[in-house]
Length: 247
Image 1 (cartoon, rainbow, N blue to C red):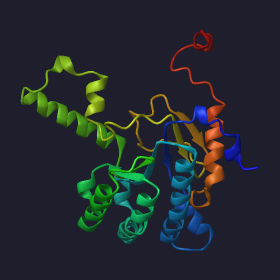
Image 2: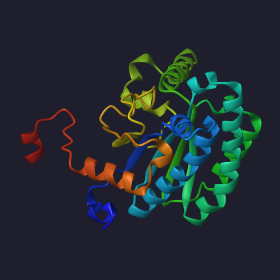
Image 3: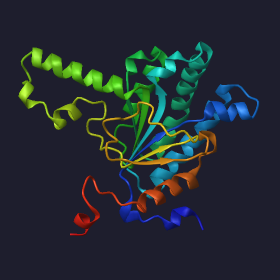
Image 4: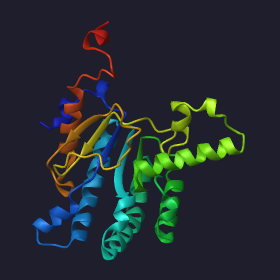
């Protein structure tokens, strides 16, 4: 029996976020270059998107490339960008076939022009799909996102279109990359590392965190189901006591 059959469809997280970690180590274990791990990780992306759509998850955010990743060896960065373009081209038809809407968050204008153009084209082609929203975090970091939001707010105050007294949590959320995207209830990180790595720091304030030793290329559908089952067995209190939740 698949773990999928044990999942309670009435208690699904609406939004799952994943830090896809371990591609390089996976490749090294096999005596290959790091890019081989990234290429192999594409299958795990495909499996995770398919599994999420099948069980009814509405939003899936994947941490694909951080602002800090620009500091990696130039050859690896170039190969990653080429892989991104290839993958977007190869998967757009499948996304449409499965009614999956593609979105992206991050400093997208910092991407190479061919990557940016392919990404924008795929986003436009899938914008009317409603089954699942797949969000790619590209050239993204949470500190960059929050700083960018503060700059936007400061400019609005300077232009007198916003008053300082009007700044609250809702105002900040409206200036984040994830506006109109619900906060993730479940955040998964692969590879055995127990860090958040500058990912959705504002949005995961009350997310359940799940860490697995699986390296990303080895992460499959059953692993996603296992994480969801673990989530469903937790008590989410949001600062309240267990007794308050019963009342």
